Image 1 (cartoon, rainbow, N blue to C red):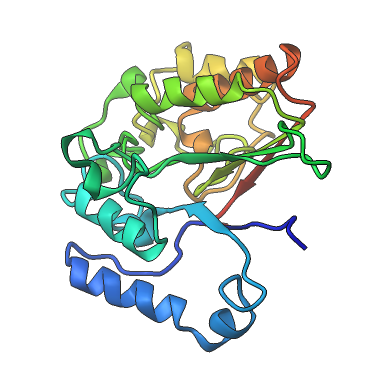
Image 2: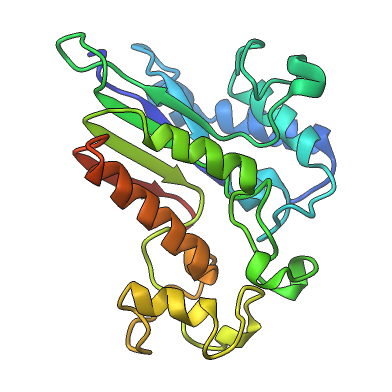
Amino acid sequence: DGQCVWAWLGDNMYMDSNNMDHKRNAYNAARNDQYYSSMGPIADPKIPVTGTWDDHDYAWNNMGKYYSCRQQSQNEFCHHFNVAESDPRHPSQGPNQQEGIYSSNLFNRPDGNPGGIHLINLDARYHCSPTSARYGPCEGTSSSMLGDTQWQWLENELNRPSDVKVISSGIQVLPPTHKANTNSFCAYDGPSGTFVQANNILGEGDDSFSGTSYESWGEMPQERLKLLRLVQKSIADGNALQVIFISGDQ
């Protein structure tokens, strides 16, 4: 009907590997799945496809910026999703290729006027600091979920006027920090530090506010607070009437 879009939210296939041939084969198998090919967005009538990734299609379980094949994996993502060569994410951009697969689409309103639904796909992998020491050297209060460049890009996107913004993330945004063993998180900086302060500001400092034990933005509450404040500012500035988060993983 012209009003649909299919957004992949990560773990679009499972291939924990540095071998890009294996990743491409896994992508191909997912695309060729009989149900996806006969009833999914690539079946007639075709639906535009976009999205982001998560750990198992990007790299390994819970991996972020220290995955050794980030760029190669991005290139396979671009191949699978038929990303245009003119797109900043595409390897054809050479040294100017964007680092990370974050993207956005601003759709017109049903009446054809601009400023309808604004779909913003975050990349919470390519620049993500380790959430625990198992995934690389801890960066403490310098831990970042998106990296400086993507944060600036996101702020610019949130300043674009639209009726509704839909923000996709491969991992969950809204669940609070899982309170068991918080000192094991790389971003934790003590009982009176910014980690605890961020949860307190959100009214989630009490242990009764405990979210998923799986990976989520709650493992870096400072970054989660930053994201939610930017979203709140976008609404307060009149750049969105409503913001909706969609996420994968769990």
